[in-house]
Length: 222
Image (cartoon, rainbow, N blue to C red; front, side, top):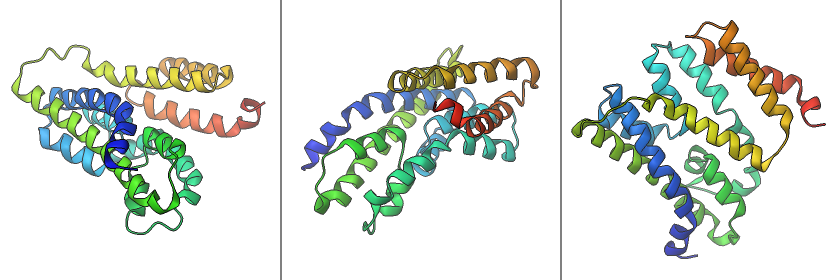
């Protein structure tokens, strides 16, 4: 597979990552975070929704422990991606650790669906992962720089994280139309709004959701 074919394969990811990256950069700018922080976060963290969450928690003056727990619970699904890719990454050499680091939802989908011969696997996997990360980095830097040089009305920008999760939830429901996890999530969200303190609502709701999903997995899978 040539580089042009690999780029063509990643175009759908590019169409999503660059606009979302711009939104992340603008959100960072609205919190008076220098543009290079957005760049380094996208290089060394590269967590998508986790980066949005980190900014939201920074803005609410959350502790490092709260940020760590919330990020861990949010990205817990990546451990299951990794388990399913063990056989795919077996035998890879220099690029294996980077591929593990760069395994996002969209990259996972491309790696699992692309028809790649074993002798080209490491090269193509690396290109796909690197291109996808580059799209996110480019979008983040564009958003952060524009937010610092062009006056924006940031009203409502904090809703970008909520909108992102709504879209992800809709897409997940379309792929796996089971009403049980959806109804459980809605009940947990309403319960959290009513019962939990507003500054601890997100992390406590995520923890409760994780416990219930693990404890009720038999009922959910019925």
